[in-house]
Length: 277
Image (cartoon, rainbow, N blue to C red; front, side):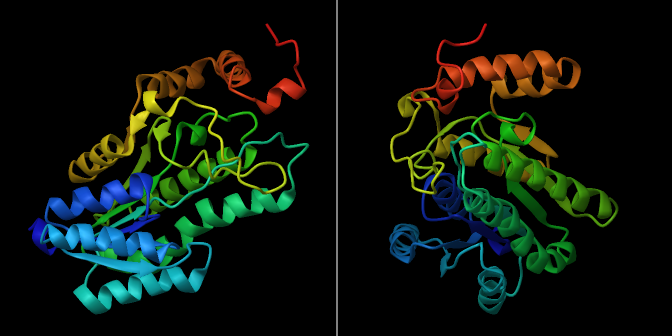
């Protein structure tokens, strides 16, 4: 029964994570959401409780191993089980590699990759017990490298390698592992993306109104979990990029380069001020 199932969502205070918590709760799941911003979690808690659904707000930082363990421990203390873990917490960056500070790349790996590893490590025994679902919210950047986003692409490649390995290790245990790859999603991830010196870029280079909504992404992820899919690539462009990348990688590199060069205030302009055919 869905009403007995417990879901953990990281990065729950905004964007895709917040939408996931709301939609999962409305479907009858018991939801524990973790984020650093406790005030936003309390706002979400109030909204969900008003609808008479269950939600557990947990303040924590996925970069900190003990916080990830705390999420699992508090959830078990309240509900006694864990059925689904959605590793959603993540940050982005935008800078050329030869200009970026190394601690910016470390921040990306600590949040995106190690946050996924820590939460998975402590939740896995309980997911195995219930033949549950382990989910990573990744990106097409985990299949195709994106220029000026070295740390982001590296972290997403690492997440996918990690989750795919977990899948194979548990091929016959009943564990479901899913990698979800949204397209560009309307959220604050680009506003908070790190620049070369570690500061937030604040101004998004994309037209947010034309992007996929966080609510639509959340719905696709939940459907994928319920159908126990291996992966969910959510845009035609993303599917085409992955497909063509298998057979024509050099062509895809050039197409991605041209696309990224056209971005507003693209860091690539510094290297290619007159463009590149």
